[in-house]
Amino acid sequence: MYLTVQQAARRLGVSPVTIRRWTATGFLPCTRTAGGHRRIDEHDIDDLAKAIGGSNHLAAQLAREREVDVLVNTATALAVKLDLTELLLEIAMRMTSLLDCHFCAISEYDAEADATRTLAEYDHVGQRIPDASPYRLRDFPLTRTVLREQVTAVVNVDDPHADPAEVAELRREGDRSLLMVPLVVQGRSIGLLEVVDQKRSRQYTRQELRLADAIAGQAAVAIQNAKLFAERRRSDEDVASLRKALAVLTARMAELGDADEKRDDVLDAVAKAVCEALGAISCVASLGGESAGAFGAGRLAASREHRDGRRANASLVVARDPSGRTDLTLAVTLPHPPGEGQSELLDFVAAVGALVAGR
Image (cartoon, rainbow, N blue to C red; front, top):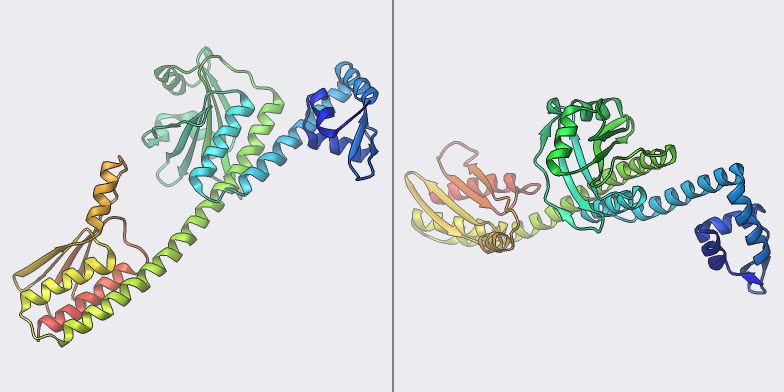
């Protein structure tokens, strides 16, 4: 009886990729159908299964094949994840599955501040855990060693020689074991993978540690790429937003220049134009003791974020008449940190507003 690649893989407990590799190298004989599909004799599968069970050499080869399979599959999965949130979930799920653990946290490392900040933490079923607060490494000397010396470390709560600070943290969370693996890109530590077993102390095999180190290396590059992609996307979005704002302000400033209005009317028009152009929460324009304010669409966006339980990152940007001839000031509250070019655009609006209001 002849088996398909998938049937042979199930019989031997390996992946189809491994079966194809074995047949390609001649390690496992096979025939081909008229359509070119591999077929493996059942007797060859049985013989190989017995040999693997009784041969250290073949068992070692099988272990190496498993490493290759895991790394190839992981590299493929991480390479296509350009969204950082999706990527972090993929990393966590692969680490918890590979090491049969309960949680995986991914942190970024700030070498200047000597601190780490959690990017995301997930349990073994993909449920996100609330992010931990940033912490300074002076309180966790072993974590500092892992990041600075780029070494992997294991901490078990029942190990009398383990770092007391790490053991105390494990006990506080009700966990039993922690594996820490540095995320390194081009010789620089950019973060940390922490894999937690909640129920048992762990003595990882050399193969498991090799795989953890290799996956951490792949993860570090993928995280770096995802951040660069996000920065490029934000830059593109900022340019599009800036062009839209310029179009709105061009129309509004032209109308303002043609109008014969009082100073408070000019300030009111400037505040409304800024809110419309930048999607601001609010804008207050003041000059010579007079002021006017307006609310924009950003106010509604901030309210929706608050209702949805998302943290709003409102930012206050202040722009003044760059000529210094007037004290015209724009105090603008944006729903998010200012994008590329927005601060400079507000300086320009302040200059135009000062000219019009001072006529």
